[in-house]
Image (cartoon, rainbow, N blue to C red; front, top):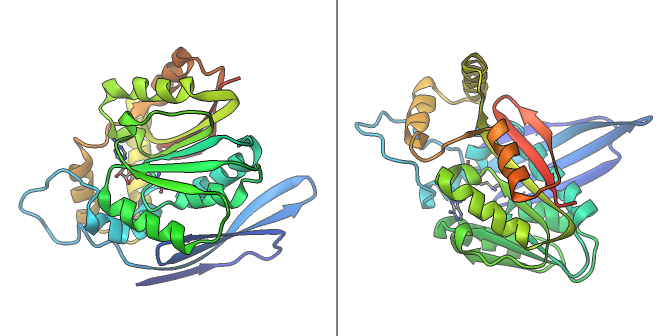
Length: 286
Ligand code: GEK
């Protein structure tokens, strides 16, 4: 179990996200016309020790029960900016979700983004559809949703996001999941989402990326690994996880993401968050 606390001083808004046995509280403070962001993190979660022991043979990474059980800790220590992206997804939901429409959380894992969106949706008649193809993730996610407060109905589907028939969509979020699809199948999924979108809808896409400049790629990977070490992962854990993900997580460049989104029909797409080689984009239908 780990226990982390970081507090800010002047709190004007407070959000709580319950996820599994973890409570993350975010506080926002405001100074004149500048909104400063700070957070209080109060975490009590199972530690990710999956790659602690040396393995004879590294097998491809799988989202099984072992991973689902420690996922809160794993993703918070492995994806820089993850808590911010989760909270900010809620702020996008508040602004973009339209009445009587569907919102999608694709590759929902434990449901953190779903809960964040649910807390901020104000429009009537909305439904969130959270999809993941890992049974372990879906079971944990359903328990998390059932334990959380909220009036917006949530359906958690055990399915491959490539099989979904999207409809009446005002917001779709695909946080750190497109990267796990074969590159040749990414465009069709995004096209399916786009085709189901209402005018004014938004797609949030968060991904690990690579860079055309090899020097930039190497630099960001290096700093990223230093950040993982700072978060308590050993060199061996970092190396073994990297090897396990090698054939499973295939990052695109920002240019590829932009070109694909534009070719599909999105009118604008902007990077709204970046930390090292992790980005979040917002793509707008109009
Ligand atoms: C979060 N968005 O907490 N169909 C459905 N689910 C899939 C597929 C697929 N084809 N491929 C992978 N997944 C989450 C974090 S994690 C990112 C997303 C990470 C699921 C997989 O089972 C896992 O739960 C999730 O996508 C990726 O905001 O672990 O780096």
